[in-house]
Length: 478
Image (tube, rainbow, N blue to C red; front, side, top):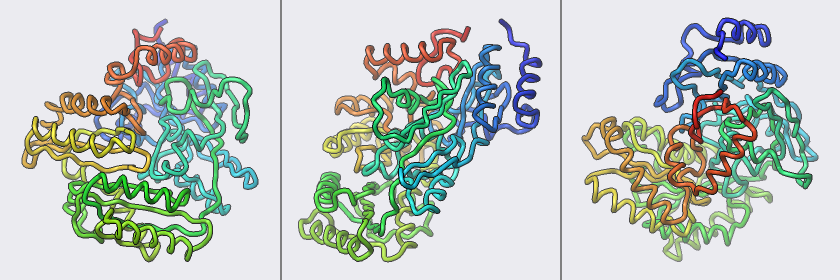
């Protein structure tokens, strides 16, 4: 059935209001991805304001066989949340679904709509003396629904897990426009398949997440942050083992930053203080303590003293105020921006067993430099949970854009071969989207891919949900 565009748009406007159906003017905020690698063109941008309006949009799209691209804050890094260039896909923005519906302090949960900005959800929890332990560099603009659709990670995974581990229930609109109310705040419910886990991490390819029940925690009585200097990744791993043994669950952050990554921050953001002298690897540790300031301070100082005595670290700096703690985190969170300022680069979001990371980095660095002399690996990330952002910058003086265009495929093959040899993953927290769709077909087992296609076929038989993301389409939607 061919699409009567004018009729479809008229019906769409009747369901959610003409002001919420955008076709004219600059739509790049919705149609161009965060990295500006995949500019698209939408049939229209639809902005429903309630779950029922989302369902009405989905029923209309099912009737007219229109493909749908759900979108939260459009902060993804793999091209999963923008339309293609055909002008036939409806961009479904969830940003107007922004309410915190309820906070249940006794149950330690909050029910929040998909379009709620993560930082707003954090602040709502904080106002009740509680803590939503999901923290990302983009938390001022990413949304809870997008975090769940991509199973976002961030800096608290070491202690609290990815977005998946923080979600107890979902509300989802199916491709046919039915509403599944799975907003349970239960921690135990063995009544069949756990459907929420199909939608978490599905990148909008199975349905539309409209609300979620998220786990909360009591606010920690004290938080302490420190930087430590290590001369090798082996020493960083040893420090992690020591910190886990001495601090236990109080260890809530363990980030690593390579020398070159920090040099880029110094070059492009000289106003950001770097408390330690230049070293091979800098570790950012954070302890969140339930007993109080003095206990947290004593625990951190004892840990660092033991690490210094053992020669695991060469130097350390402990934040003496909230401002100093924020400055240390700013140092870590500015690496991506510094990379962007340096020029286009080849990004990898890989996961490995922590024990395999030193060998992986040493061998892969050497292989890259042997093939592309002068190439600059920019390595940083969440060592505590085995997730590295292992990015590759062009040699000094070489055109970054040309290096990306000419060498990305070969660099990816080298890096991902090494990841696979260490039984790792090519995507730890960013997802698949368009960027890694074809790579997934090469790297995932045939059995796993067949199971994924079966799920897609069962829940989205027409192939209209975010087509050609994560899994390639077998053909055009019917």
